[in-house]
Image (cartoon, rainbow, N blue to C red; front, top):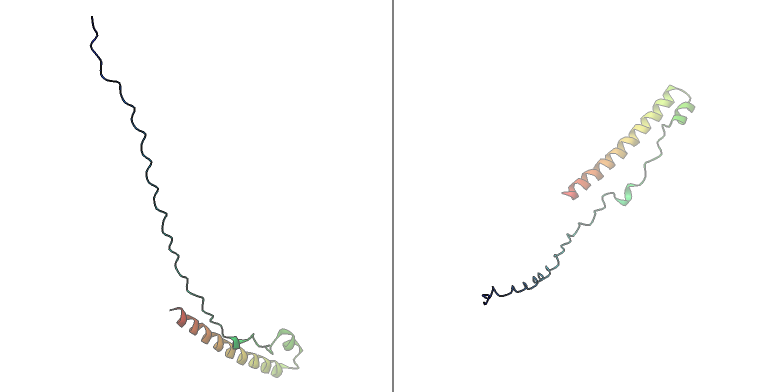
Length: 95
C-alpha cells in the first residue's frame, strides 16, 4: 500500500529585507542676532559723591552738611539722567 504524498515541504521564508537607512536629519542652525552694545564708552564710572559718611561727620556744621548733601544730590540726578538715557536707547535697539 502506498502512502499518498503529503504536502510539499514548507520553504523557509526569505529573511526580511533591511529597511533602507533613513537620510540623516537636516540640521538647521538659526542665526543668533549679534548682541548690541548699549552702554556707550563715554558713560564712565560713577562720580565721587561729596556726601560720604566720613565727609558728613567731618563737616563743621549743619550748613556744611547741607551743602554736601545738595552737591551729592545734583551729581546723582545728573548720573541718573545719563543712565535713563542709556536704558531708553537700549530698549529702542532691542525692538
